[in-house]
Length: 327
Image (cartoon, rainbow, N blue to C red; front, side):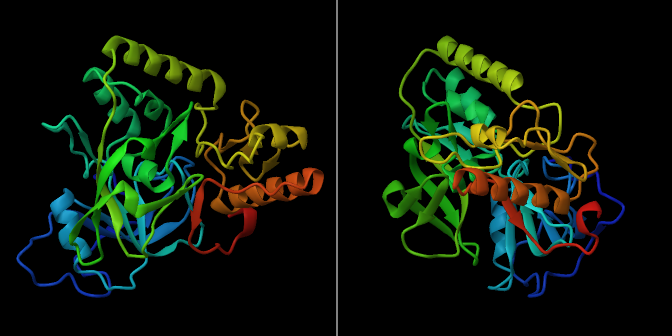
C-alpha cells in the first residue's frame, strides 16, 4: 500500500462520520478517514474505482475504536497489500480499512509462538521466523500479501498452507470487541476459511507455531523461492497473482494456455505471456472492467473447450462503471 500521505487529488480528508456517527466515546481517533478514495493506487493491478470511505488506522486499538462507531450494516472492505483485489470502476459504496503499515506488530512470545497482526506482510513473517531459527514458514515468502489475507484464504504455495501453523487468532467484531478463537472453531476449504458459527468478525492477528529448524537453511530456501517467483511470474507488470484456483488434478495455467489464450488482450489487460494464470496491466491503462471481461472470457473458453469451470482466486467487489471496457 502506498504511503497514506500520498493522497490522490480526488480524495478528501473528512471529519464527518461514515453514516452512523463517529461516536462520543473516550477514544480520540488517531487514524485518517477519507472520502472517495481511488483504489488504483492501493491494489497491485493498478486499476479500479474509488471507495466511498477509506480508514487508515493508527494501530489495532485505533481500529477497534473506529469499528465500534460504524453502523451495523456498513459494508466493509479489508485491504492489506491489495494483491488479490479488484474494485469495479463504479466503486465500492462502503468503508475500506487499510491494515498494512498499521496492524504491523510482529514478535515472538515467551512460549515460542509467533504473533503477527493482520497487516504484516507474509514475506516479512517468513524472514522473521527463519531468523528466529524455526522452519516451514519459508513458503510465506512466496505469498505477496498480508497475514490477514493469508488467514482469510488459507493462502499457500510450494506445499505449505497458512492454517497448518495457526494456533490461535484474534478477531475484532463490529462493536470493536476483541475475540480470541482457536483453530478448531474454523472450517476450511481450498483457498477459503470461515467460522463454523456465522459472525461479523474480522481477522486482527494470529499466533503461529513453527517447528525448530536451521536459520541459514531457512534463509536459503526463502532466497530460492523468491528467485523462482522472479523467473516464473510476470512481476515486472502490475498483476494480482494467480487469478484462478487450480482445479483438482490440473493447473489453471495449463488449461488457459491449451485454450490458446496466452497473450490475449482486452483493453489494456492481457493474459501474461510468461504465466497464463496471471492477468497483467503492462501499460497501467487497463480499467477494472477490461480485467473483469478478460477473466470472464478465460472462464467461458476453458469451459467450452474442456468442460472445466475455473474459479477465481481474486476478489472482485463494487459496481460496474458506465464506460465499458475502455473506461
